[in-house]
Structures are given as structure tokens and as C-alpha cells.
Image (cartoon, rainbow, N blue to C red; front, top):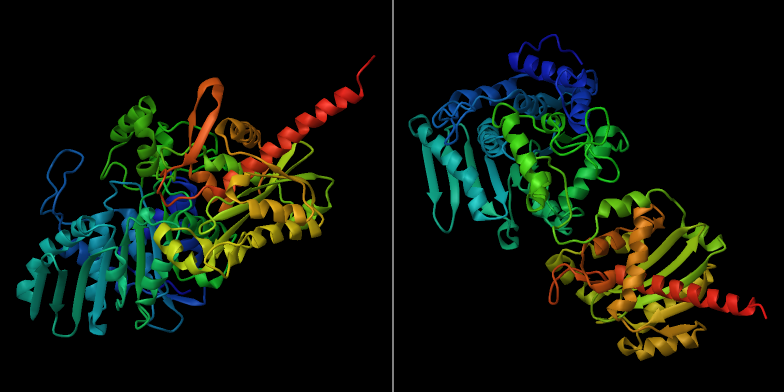
Length: 595
């Protein structure tokens, strides 16, 4: 790539910023460092072009015509009415988004972007300014942009910022119309040589259909549930009529650790570190600012050592606008409060360190399960060949909803749990959308079977146990609460399985629950990397009773939309193993008794 004609001072700023981070002159988290390395490598490529005209236009437009509408600087001086001067990281983003082009073309390289930031980094003002600048840049194509957030109130943060700024354009454009009422929040501008329309809408299904635009800003993606991929794809398809389109996701972290954003983040981190090299992600700009973590979710410092949440180095690493929009002293004060008050810790982790956590009421830390699971990599075929005695369990309490079967065994001290879900196909689409359950993803991955009937049939679950037996799994005993399906009970007997009536009393399930908990903490629990099982584990809420017994339920209680059925089935099967082991020991002692 020939950079000899690049004379822009903004390019110099972005280049120096990237080099400073790569050379560790600026403390930054791993993902931000990898983003800068990617930028420097891209500048050496010959299959894409790099030009300065568009990012110069965007940055100069923002700094020359857009002003702050609220806030104060670190010295308490009002920002209102002051020019919006971009920080180095913001210029770095602009240079990337508007500097790279497809080879010998006017089509910009980046079509999608994720800007993942802690709170108070100026993301609302920056995203609004970026939307206005891009709309003006692409006005000749009839630019149309949408700002989408979870609520109207959130979208109005951006919209009101834009209204305050575009009002000053009235004398310089042919036509400016602002609609700000209960029905519509929009800005329409006719520049004479092109038009620009900006809409602020809430993230509601009925408002997202039939969109047609070249710019989408998706705010606070962290609150999107697990089925958010459909909504994201719907909005991405809204830009098909344009070549120079841009979909920007801008967000902090949240407490849905297997939601759309959390899963997208994992994928994009693999793109940055080189694990994924698919060309489909070459058009995806990635800028991630968060605290570094190990596999168990522990916070790491710049040396990769486990540290505390009040480590100044960590706070500086994950805060790109430090000492501009927020000071280190303020962050340290927040960290101290979070350490002294557990009720504040989750919010601090989500919004300041920008890491995902479980919901506050969730009993398990899913990172502990994942860390244990990642120690092993047996396939089903491998497990079928091992000398393991397997114990089964099933949760058939609601055949019109999620139903589960499980096998549980132990090999050289490692507990292994194989789970499988069942769901009626007729209700799958509705429940996947309404309740945010990725049923079709589980089906593709082999963790779920869909019944072609209004309810799951007992035969479906029986056939799964038969198929596992045919694969070579030595199933000694299956536990099941007979009151939830005598038909299943007798069909399992008829199929040749030894099945035992296992009432679902919490004091009985407590033993299996505690056993799994201990095995997970000792990294001796393997569940074949099942996303479906992880989903259920994250939805478990538990209350400790007398004698350390545990009573568990789903997070949102009766009538809620979350599911724990696969975890339930694993507990049933674990209880069967523990009871059989106990009876086996008693029998051995009796046979070996001394007279």
C-alpha cells in the first residue's frame, strides 16, 4: 500500500496512537492492542486502498461544526456549547472506518463495526456525531440513518444531541425539517446536492420491519437476549440497497453472559487474535476496551497476573478516555465502594471494567463451569468406548415446552454429563423469539431434537436413550419421577432399561446439586461444551436451607421465561449415580463381612 500521498494530521494521530499502544507506551487491554496491530498490518496490505479525503472530512466536520450539549471537563468547566474535539482513540476509529477502501473502488472496506466501551467514555456524543457526519458525507446517495436503542428515552439522548447541533444548519441548507413528537423523532435535511434523513427509534419488532438505510447505530447491545441474532440480521438486511453502508454496534457489557453481544464479542476476539481468519470478517471493524480476564473470569493486569478490581493499572487499561471524560481518582473511588459493598460490584464490573457477569441472583459462575469443561475434549464416540457406567435422568414435567434427558458417569475422578433437549417444533419459533432461547442453534449443534407434534412425545426421549445405548453407552439405571409420566416409565422398562422412581424432593436433589458444584470447582466436570447446558446453568437460582441443603429454581421463578431443564436432568442422573454407589458400597461391605 502506497502511503506517500497521505499527508493528513489525523492519520498521524491515529498512527502514533496505534504504535504507542502496540509498543506498550500507552496502557491498554489485549483486544485494543490487537486492534492497533491489525491497523498497522492493514497499512502494509496491497489488496485494499487507503485514502485520507473521507476521514479528514468526517473529523474536520465533527470538530468544526458539532458542539457539546452538556457535561463538564475534569476541572468542572462547562462543556455546553464547546466544540466536540475528538480524542485520539476516536480519531483512530474514524480513520479506520473512512480510510480503507476496496481495491480500485469507492466502496469503503468496513460495513460493520463494534465499539465496545465502558461507561462515561463519550460514546453517546461520539455515535451521534459520527451518524451526522456520515449522513452528510453520503448525502448524494440519499443518506438515511437510524439510531436504535432499547427505549425511546435512550434514543432521545442521541437525537436531542443532533437536534441541538443541526438547528445551526438552517441558514446553510435548502430545507431542514425536525419532527420531535410522540409519533416520530426525525431530522430531514436537503443540501441541494443530496439529502440526509436521521431517525431515532426504539428497539421494537414492529418498528424494525421494512427499514431501508445506509447507516444503523445500535446502542446498548448488551441487553439483547440470546435470540438477538435474528433482530441483528433483520437490521443488517435493511442496508442491502447501499454499497457504502455501515452498521455500528456500540455498547457496554451487561449481565447476559450468553446473550447476542457476549457471543458476538467472543467471535470478534477470535478475529483479532487470529483464531478466525474468514474473509467475511475483513469488513468488520473491531474496537474492544475491557478488562483482561483469564478463563475463570479473574481480572488480569498488564503482566497477565490475577489482580483486584481496584488495580489502577487495570482501570487505565480498559478506559480509553481516562483523564478526559473521567479521572483515575473517580474510578478508584468507585472501585473501593464496589469492593466494600457487594451490591455495587456487579454494576462496576459491567459498566466500568466492561466485563460480562451473571445476573445478580444467579447461583453459579458460568466461567467456573466453562473453565472445568475446557480441561477435557472427549467426543461422544470416545466416551462410548471408555469403561464408564452411565446413569440416566429425565425432566418431563412440561412436554409442551423444553424437556431434557441426561447421562451421568465418572471416569478417573472426572464427572461427565451428557445432556439432550427436546422441544415441539410447532412452538419453537414463537418461544425462541418471545423467550430468547436459541433453540434452532442448539438443534444445529446436535443438542436438541424437535418433535413434529404439539408436544414432545415420550417416544422421542426413549429413542434418545436407546440411541445412546446402541452407540455403546453402558446405561445401568435411569431415574425419573413417575408422577410426571407413567407412560415414559413403562416405555423405558419395555425398551430394556432399569428405571427407578425418583421423586423430585429438594432434599434428595440437594446431594446431586452439591456434588456437581464441588466437581466444577475442582475442574473435574465435563459437559461436552454444550451451549444448551450452559444456558440452563446460568438460569439457576438457589436458596440454602438448614444443614446446608439447597433448594433451587429458575431465576425468574414460576411463570418466568427462563429454563433450567437440562441442569435438572443432570442433577437427577447424578443422584442416581451417587445412590447406586452408596448401595454398591453397602453390598460390598456385607459380602466381605468377617464372622
